[in-house]
Image 1 (tube, one colour):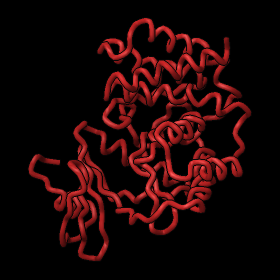
Image 2 (tube, one colour; image 1 turned 30 degrees about the horizontal axis):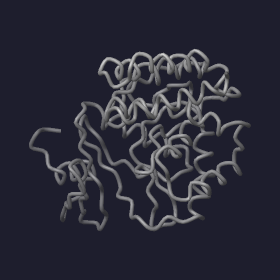
Image 3 (spheres, rainbow, N blue to C red; image 1 turned 180 degrees about the vertical axis):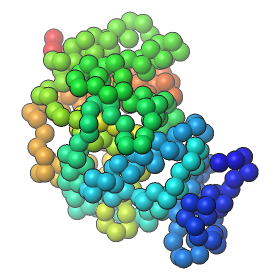
Image 4 (cartoon, rainbow, N blue to C red; image 1 turned 180 degrees about the horizontal axis):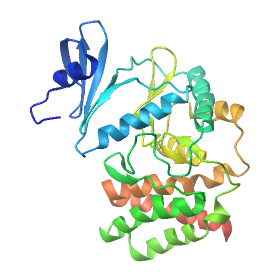
Length: 289
């Protein structure tokens, strides 16, 4: 993408269709109408390579054939073009179906913890934060080394997390083999599954956008949903449990899985999230004494 590229020109290039209009949605997103009646969304990314990483993640999630994912029309270093999702109301029925579909997505698996989507880079992103996709075969060790500690160090360096608080998070990392619950094979994760990335479609289905997709622990996606809230979350969890019952004690492990997104948010947005991360770490430590 060149500095003079417009949403319309990017949409035309990747879809091969003439453009009949466009409507800004936000600073980064624009709806573009095509001459065949379809509407696509053009997303501009500041970080080089972020658009390609997101496109690879969307395609990998779609390949599972479970949760609805907007079709990708193309991506380059800074722009991504996908189908627009026509939105409708959230419903309990759609939530239960989404729970079952999310279980199916996780069951589609990944080659390793931290595995990037096919064609996706090792140096990826979660939101605006860099995220490395480095493969590992032991979830507690991998999660500590590549999801918790890098963001803890950045937060400490910025003064967002205090040294004494960091020690509690480090103790959680040391005790992850005790805290992680039964071993699970690598799941195919959305990776940034907060409410804003869950779209309730007019077709009565849930559609997922903006992934930070990688191989991980299935409870991580569920913990992210709980962290920021989601309509009909109880029905989503019921549908998930129907399709793939979670191991005993999973609710007690939610804080462990929330450490990663909370520390990412502490790095990006400051002290309030750091306090939540420290509270989650201390709660986890109380479980093991």
